[in-house]
Length: 344
Ligand code: SP5
Ligand code: ZN
Image 1 (cartoon, helix red, strand yellow):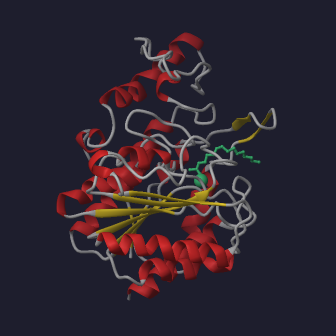
Image 2 (cartoon, rainbow, N blue to C red):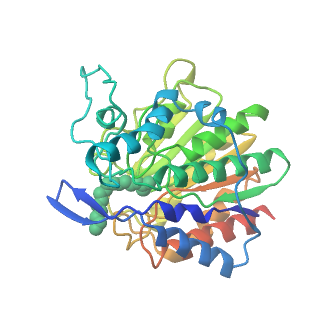
């Protein structure tokens, strides 16, 4: 399989995170060492050639995202730096909720318009890293369009919490959605999201569409981030009704139950007859992940990959979360080797 990776992800290095549930500031989990560990594991297993992303123009981004969000990303840090004399981070301290719907002109004040949590900082290198992650995903989609059967975009920062005109959850642009949009040029993609957290951004982007199926397994939002979406009754809207499927899981879900639910999710995808599958692969489902709360043993990831690979669809895997610096690499590489084995 082809592997897309840019070392520029390291330009984005958040340092700390505010945890409102504990009333604490602690080290930020979404750090460059994550991707370095995954790259090392992928290389050790000889999973395929590692390639840099191709270059794309802004129209690739606005095929999914609001031009206002892109303009905000370009303007906010220089404006903030001019005002504070500091390099970052830009974080919202007031949020546009229901009824608070006037967007101010000042890009610094737009932080709380576009960003929905205080854990997703904009730093000096953030935008460059974000663009490279998006380009990795879109390049992966282009490789499938050119006839590759499997590709892996080792994206960092992740993307599935970013919506058309908002960001949060350590995500800025929706890498998987950008890839799926690209694939729509030649067929109907399905997206399978197996990150620990619900992919609220991806769901939202395709919620009204019957052309892209979104299926997600994740911790029940009743006890886990992102809290406000990912419930079973969210089925899509308008033409998209029936093309969105959530499988919320109880805390502590283990391998046997997880595999049962994954099998049902794959049945729904099969019934859609997709031309391509995009997998949002979060490995924050592993038992000792510092952010997640499921109990998948690291040894089960190859089998999950085999299950996803056995129907034989062309598959693009996009990296999402996974915060155990020790296990994210082995889990992601394990999933990919199972996938490659089953697709061979
Ligand atoms: C892509 C992705 O996995 N985003 C996850 C965003 C979750 N953010 C809120 C979770 C707060 C976690 N607190 C971490 C404790 C570390 N000791
Ligand atoms: Zn996650």
